[in-house]
Length: 196
Image (cartoon, rainbow, N blue to C red; front, side, top):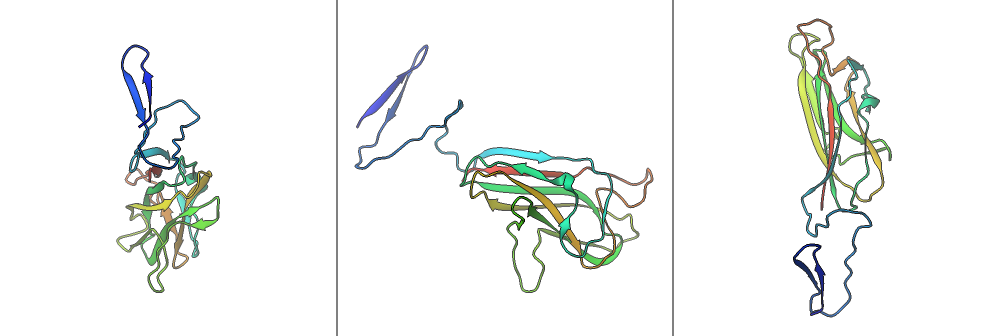
C-alpha cells in the first residue's frame, strides 16, 4: 500500500494511505483555506436567517401570493447533495373568521412550489390556521418547516406565500388594533443546509 507522509511544522506526522485495491480513485481537495472533513453527513454546512421588521401586514388574497418581500431569504448551497431545512415563525391573526388560511414556502428564484404534498382535493401547503375566537385581535404563533434537496450549488431565494379561502382580512406579525394591550412580533425565517 502506497502512502504519503506529511511532517508537521513543529512535530508529528500525518500519513495518507491509499487502499490496496485496483482502479483509480480521486480525492479532490477544496481550492480554499479551511479544514477538510471527509464524513460530514448530517452536519450543518451553513445557516442563513432573516428577522425583518415589517410592522403589521394585512392580506386579503384568495390565491397564493407573497405575504411580504421582507421575508425573502437567499442561500447559495455549498453542496449539490445537501438538504435545505426551511423554518418560518410568525404571529398570525385570522380576523375572527371561519375562513381557513394556508401558508407555504415558495422558491422565488425559480417560481416554484417547495416540496408540497397532495391528499385528495386538499390544497398543498406547509401550514394552515382558522381562528374564530373572540374578535379581530385574536392571534397565534405559527411555525412551519419543510425540507428540499439542494440539487445544485446555484443561488436561490425563498419566501412565504399565503392565501385565505375567502376575502376576509388576515393579519401578520401584529394584532389588527393598535393599543398597548396588544402585541407585535418580528417574524423569523431560517434556512439550514445539512450535508447529505
